[in-house]
Image 1 (cartoon, chains in turn yellow, orange):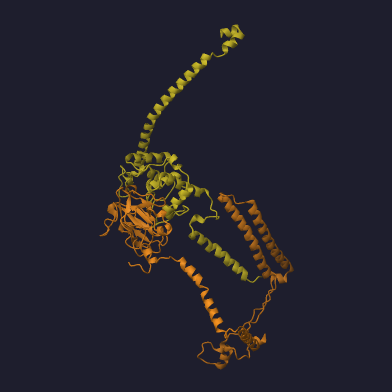
Image 2 (image 1 turned 90 degrees about the vertical axis):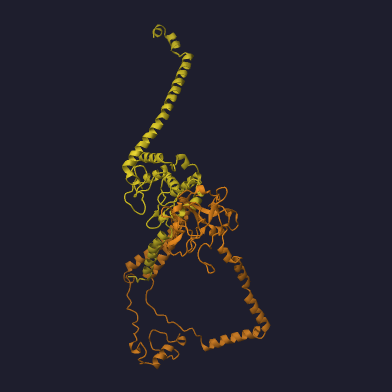
Length: 268
Length: 362
């Protein structure tokens, strides 16, 4: 400051940073960044296990409040609900995330309805159930997009899924009021969950039966169906001869009858 | 017209004795044995009085109908042009299914309008503007005059005489022989489309045999017993099926559904104790009713539903029929494991798979 006031020319030279200052700055910056990184990462690992425990604890509370009446306080099951030991995170995510559980009323099968819990709560419940006994895990985002071959997926879908869920995934009837639900618009993670956990009367398709890549292919096929319009026009629910036959019976034959009456009627 | 008249006119009496109806009436005019008394014959009421149409009475309406018909024909022209324009303006882009739909829809609408316009216009024209005076057109007998008949016989006789068809027996008979044989190549060709071998043994056996590994459909990879967890359902083809020339024919008989139940849930009859492996059972997927693939497996109820006619099979009771038109349980494939832990067949099915056929022994 004193130099500045005494000589403006010198002050300009003194105002320029010394090369050493830059070096010092870089050193200080690197050290603080590195130190902070080390600090944050160590605290992050410590936090994650804490968070995990917290999530499981939250799940336990949710479970005790919402599920334990039927499934038992220790997931052992009761006369009204099956044991949940070993069903894994996948089954929990599917049943609770799609609103099938908690069950509103007993019936041939649990219907899909608006989910009662937030995604975070569903994950907490899944973590709790998975912490009690090992079971099929919920898919990771990477698993869901590991492979994208809709043709392979379609072939596997036709062999393994289409007999119940319809070749276009429109769903279909089973015995005694049970049914295979429509698969259009179902989230990829729930499709995966259903395959690995076999909810309700659906058989299990474990990773030894349909490999994880092929599961991703099947999901790719379902997504392809969702975003590919029906070439033949309005698909009438993709139910095949039932809905199409009903439509042509009522509207097609109706039109033919109407034209016939017009043809033979005497004009005024 | 009069010479062909066989008396089939609108009720007026005819002096023609060849008409069967009128001669019968004359023979038995009042026979009480005839249900319908001739006295009771309903008289031909004739036509109702002709009612002129609005278009006949009112020149304005006539003009309007004319305009309507013209409009319909113009509509047809618009439809045809629209179809071509839409086909050009909304082309099919390869790989884009939506473009296929748009193209088909607009093309179809245009062509439909083009044809409907002509059809509706023509009918409207006929109904509103063309003459609608009712007319009777007499129906004529088909018998020709005696002179025509005699002429026809003469032509045949002349043809026979000139060709020598009856006189030259050798030519005639060889021609008949040639005509009889011409369809023979077609018979041989079409017969050869049928399976060369006797179909009965083919229906009674499948490619499964002792030691054939159970493999996944469609990849053909073998299945370990440990892969089949409780509640699982595997769609199974025999090992090596994919390499066969008649793959589809064999698959239609050999397709199998593999399921794992808790061993205590299975009710095994005597003689079949070794057919399942630790609760893993394999059943033919071909329905015993009419051969649809039965694969709608419910893992909690252990029921197997056939989608075609709703036959239900209870897997816990060896696929016994519990509902529907099927008459026999699904045949069970006896299975075990080989030294490497892969599931293998103990033998072929012990009965023919699929629906009944005449020569079936069971």
